[in-house]
Amino acid sequence: MIFYKPLREMVIKIGVPNLYSKDNEDLFLKRVELTLNKTLKDDKEFIDELLKEVNKWPVVLPLYEYLNKEIVETRDKQIKKWIE
Image (tube, rainbow, N blue to C red; front, top):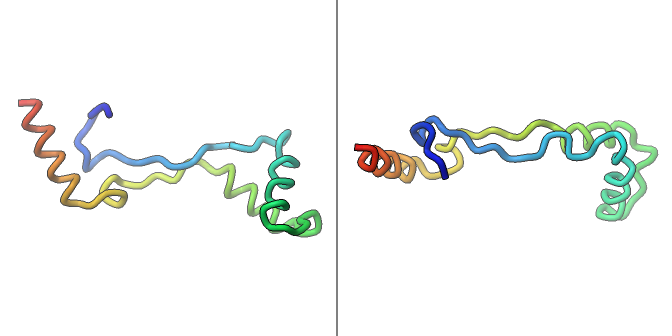
């Protein structure tokens, strides 16, 4: 990990933007159909929402929400000590 700023200001990014391009939508839908064990071709609204979710930009969380606040504060103190 590279400490480019205090941990309390860092964020966690989860997800992959544009994971399934237009060219790969059919492949994605086939995989979903196999997983759900049903046909989706008639459920346009569900498909659109599903593709929107899978292709959205990463979820960004403050580190405090991802880790325990006390852990972050302890690490901040350790980093500050190393810097000094």
